[in-house]
Image 1 (cartoon, helix red, strand yellow):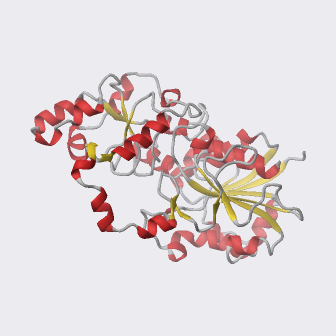
Image 2 (cartoon, one colour):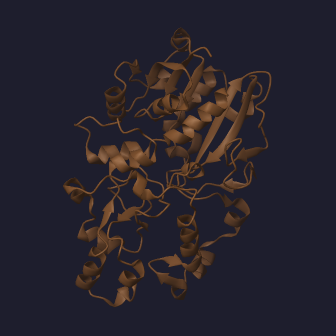
Image 3 (cartoon, rainbow, N blue to C red):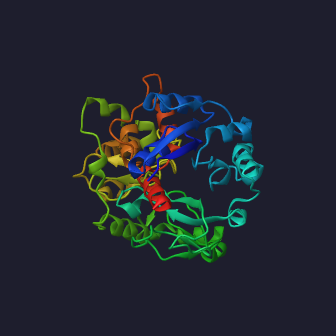
Length: 374
């Protein structure tokens, strides 16, 4: 196989580059493009020989692109304009300009609607690392496309695949527009989503239905099923060894008291963790799981009659769990970054969490590249 010439757009900290290497496909990266200066520092730290263009993509002319003579593009456009917890500005959000510019100069107006007209075979996916046995929910939309006369042997244009070809899907195939995405969760049928209302949610959240924290019996059973799935690795396989350096990651007392009922608490033997976002380590709610390092303590014993306790008693009980954040290295491990991947010393902890939260799962993308070329 001839070596592919690859252009990386929205190169970030190098997740796509790592995925390209992990795929085993013979390839050379002709250029990487990103406007984020801190991400570019990290990229250059890990790939010092790759030409790195620190500029907006819409500032690059078609002539400049042509001079690169690439035959493959890997890109991960900014997701914030399209996420459930963002501003939901969609194509009106300024952060989509570079992506729309690429679609325009190829030339394309709308991605999926015009790929066929341009002679591309394509396939859409909804994939989470859990389908590769990685204990982290990070459900994301992916699309692969190649210029050819024949479609992919597994191509299903009316469906979004939720598993890799030749692998058993995590769930059955689902029609387009049949689901909406929950950050770090499973697809939720639109029919179910449409029927949900504030009144329904309040009805489901009656106090007597909770065993402890803010979790229903159904939610606890779902987590138990995930922890019993032996096809997924345990979190302990991705954790750093205990040492003095880990003490800085323990949750402060103020956070323990304020957010006790919102924490997604996992242990090293769990086979699950929620999606780590760019706010992890800085914000609590909905940004990612926290690790209970005192594995011999039962959560039920800590949260039993919790509301009747004084603040001092609450803090004493919560402290027995020895809760800490996952370290940036551990999140990088879950994302599939190799051990040699690192950050320059001047990149702060907050910046590391932010960059990792905006990154992608290397193993998932590597598998998709293999499927694309294969």
